[in-house]
Length: 173
Image (cartoon, rainbow, N blue to C red; front, side):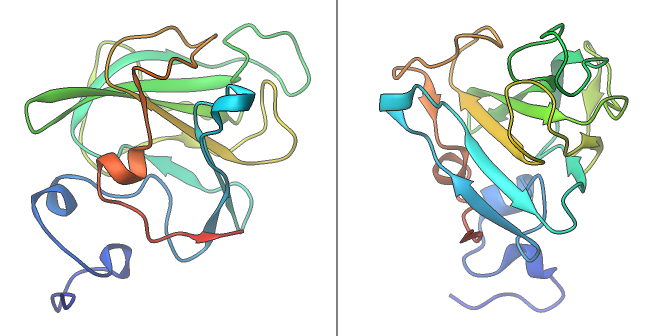
């Protein structure tokens, strides 16, 4: 499949309805996958590193902000979650809900409010290292049903957003 002229380099390769409805939360070109979902370590998300280390994180599609929490400081108490400052957005993919957490956002960067609707590409925060985190990175955790921000690992509901949304043009770090 060839890329259509006029489309951004964000969308290299195959295009279809999902690629029109959704975009990566951070760019492909200057970000890479550091860690994937690891059941044995109960790591439910996909960790992404970027250069520069703190870039804007955007909503992958039109959706509803279910939760948003800010104010947690690096190295401080988990006042939002073990995942630090975060935003949780409900997307509809086909006719099924997909709940996506964006974890470890920088303190003071969360730019959306719970109960609001966001459009694809809206900045929701900046990459940070709040919560249980070693260095600046984005953790994108996706599930097919509602779950709490802490104690997320549930193999029946956790999915890899890259597969689910046909969005996997990052290199490994």
